[in-house]
Image (cartoon, rainbow, N blue to C red):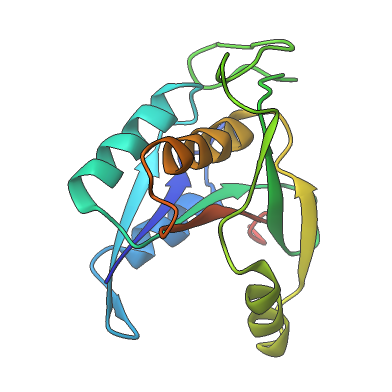
Length: 173
């Protein structure tokens, strides 16, 4: 089995992104018999989704977990819903700042996560980690990637692929 874990490069003047650190740390690992691939994506609307699509085509993963940074949140946030909305309060790393734009013109308003979130919450909390469910991944690049992932899953008949998005808090440093 192949697992793809993605993270983002730092954005908004930050020097580090915890999702990048996790994706890099997962590269080349074998966990529970699964081969794990870690990919760091640009924090850029559209480009991150294109790079994810390329990785999915190359690897044909059974599981895709996209990670992002949600500074100021107290712990891991398991995202339930991807919205067909790009609405950036700050520019991405190439200066793009969409306002009230759809991601896929013919796409549905939203997609549910394709990850076993309840089981993930139990496992993380059982390990002593702070974890919570989050209704949506917002409207920045994280949500854009999450929505693009789920749209790809729906339109390429990848329903057996476990896929979704998880936000990580800032690192102590």
